[in-house]
Length: 208
Image 1 (tube, rainbow, N blue to C red):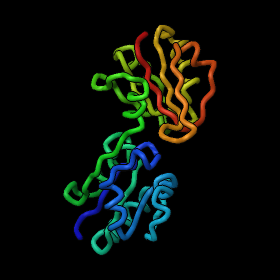
Image 2: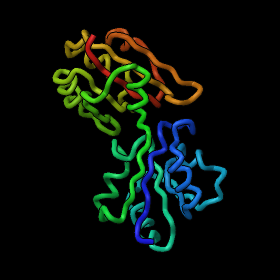
Image 3: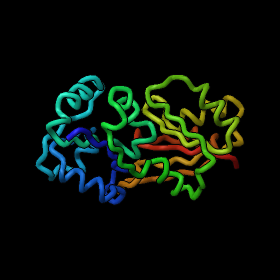
Image 4: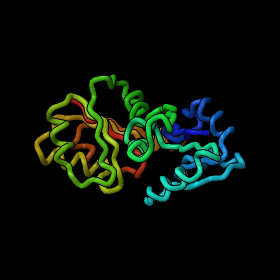
């Protein structure tokens, strides 16, 4: 074995998990992923390695084991959109990694909003305190797909943009996508600023 795999698990529900990822998981010796990813494969009796903030530890584990073990790294959504893949590509040659796509939460969010997304800009505020990039993107682009986090929930984002004079924009929020608790809200930004949301959501900002 001279490579390992990075696969997207989709938004979280097994309904959006690709069959190829399930097959790779069944053949793997080790599954590496966050709690939600590993929970999808809880019935598989595999060695499991939880992703934490200590990415160097994950990198070293892979480097020390991928030649002897079949390793599958599970990431939320699609590996090509704000995932661990970027970090791994900085430390491993591309030929050592095989990438398996998945359904991004933003892809599903655009589908729920019934909006095309080929002309959208994508931004993640995970771990970032800089809203300047978001303001620039919203003013320059017709549509912005946004990964939010607990520091910047949709209502706080909406309030910030309204304060910057962008009250003519609309926001579509998809919360708990693919789960039984899924909820979608489509309002202008001023109205969204008065709403409250859980931690697991994506947001699309677009013109009225």
